[in-house]
Image (cartoon, rainbow, N blue to C red; front, side, top):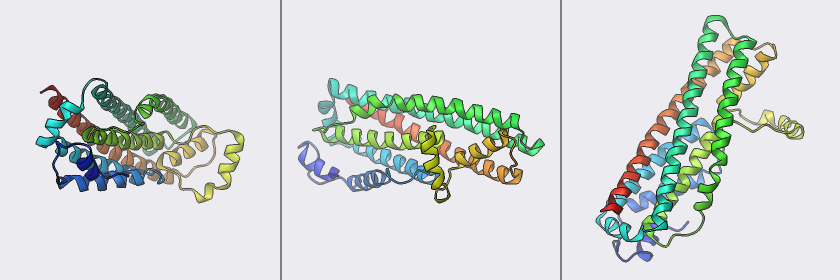
Length: 270
């Protein structure tokens, strides 16, 4: 990955001849987030990525407020260029809204299941109710993921301006993390029989996510198979805790996205 320090030297003579102290931090966080894209998705790894995104947006906001950046941005951001950047930020806000809604629905559904487990255990009716909620959330998530193709296409290509390139880099890595989060909540897509057989052979080597564990338990209960209530209760409690942690991270990211968008709008409108 090309360093933003190099961008600051080569792409704009209006920016400082020496890189700002925030630039190395920005580069380090961006590189770390990009390198984690290929890592397996878990609630802890996604939480770490959300925290990294907050730090990255803080760095970006600081760099945008530099006098040199405020002089360069209005010149760099004009016509279709600024429209793309602003459209991208708006789509990320919409995507964040979808993530927040999906997590809220799953939290409410999980809390209801946990309450039922405490009162009377879990029967096939309660299991079917939970799985119906999961199906609705998955459908919403798959629709959102399909709608991301336009944003992913717009991210391709190189920008000749340093701040615009940084805005697009942050947009790209934010999109990647949100996609991972949505895929984590949704779980694996429905598979063909062959895929399921192939997956079952390696199932013992895989660690199921919190969502997948509850899904599997509820599918067993729905089919009137024996299930350990105590084990389910513990897993549901873990899932609820993970959802709350992710909710907090997404809410913080949402505020950072708004802050960067407002900063950009203020700079280019002056």
